[in-house]
Amino acid sequence: MFVSSWRDSADSSPDHTMTATRAAAVRHLPPTPIPLGHTAEKKHSLLERIRQVLALWRRRHQDRAMLRSLSPRQIADFCPRQADVEAEMHKPFWRA
Image (cartoon, rainbow, N blue to C red; front, side, top):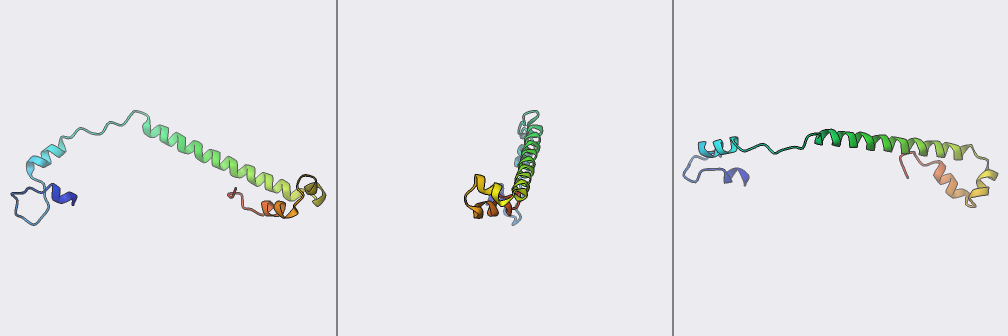
């Protein structure tokens, strides 16, 4: 157990407390360095990914709306199986 590893072996008290020496050592550990701009880059990449997904969903919505507007004859010109086109037309925009 993590807490028991910090417990002083000479300490017979049942609580899991650190000794003063160990507490001081932990308090003086240097902070983990974080590169400048690291969180900003993550935030930027997350926003970019969200923008890309939204653009993809908008494109799918537009494409499927265009398919619904075509006549059966126009659909037959580019796809011999009507069932494939019907399935694509009725998919929600978030499905590939």
